[in-house]
Length: 420
Image (tube, rainbow, N blue to C red; front, side, top):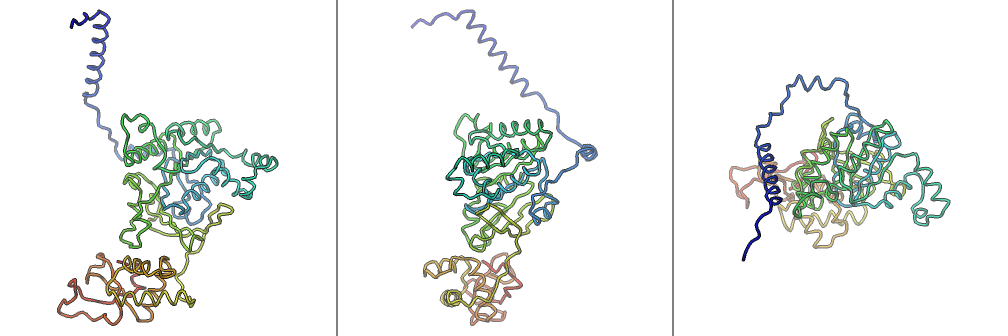
């Protein structure tokens, strides 16, 4: 088969392509200067650029973070489904908007109608009014929302595009800005859109975390994103598996990039949200506090930490104590995970409530019926097991237990974690 002779135009195009590729290769291979600064240079760069905290209205959170979020920083709010992540995110957004901050909401897990409904509830309206949507109500709500600088971005927008638009609107008003993202696992960034292959979920989250950091730094805006927890972090009752620092689903990048990371869990059957300050660059970490939930008004308020009470004499709680005691007698040296499984299998009422199980264990310890002991003597990090009091003995010279460990009693009050 005879091939056509190349034309001058073809040869010119090929030469141009080759030259362009050569230039790019040479540019890529050029030695790049090392990016380095001295501490003095860093310190001098601070001049005229103080860190500005924005209060959230939640006293305990503001106290722990030195006055609230800092513009230019990143917060992550992690939790199981229905733990209150979006509720807290929306409250922070509304409070900041009321303070004059220009707020953006990039949500995939929550539709725009749902966000406006939540805002309406926070403004004192009923959910049924948001559903009926009568003209009078719509007019009133629109006028109340008009003064708030809040932008709801389409779920298909990227983090970078939303951040740039928000920064421009804030600059026009001479205000600061804050971008709220729901969630880091669901949104997309420019790198993901430009990817030539289907990225994995982990790659998506890692890319989004990088985009969030770049957006916060470039525009000096506060960025707060929700994130799902790994299932082991909220489904297991074994505290060894509940590592909030590593609980970010699909990525460890979240824990490394966050300036503040909060882990949320339902407490008191949903009446409270337990907030664990897992990482905090502005104050103390691994501090837990509680917020009271008012779902009709979509608000969270500071609440005292619930006390583990031992005055429950209801038939249900008394039976729970008896069932736990019997389960430990039947299977000595079980851990908390084994206890939960046993109660679930026996279909014991309230057996699935961790707070009530812990209260029952504490009562049994006080009554002298059980003790919580180290799984391996002298190694509390190996976990704890539950032992009926008849099996508790003083340390002896020989190790005659199944696992070669002495059975030594541990006071539950001295070791509140008391878990395997």
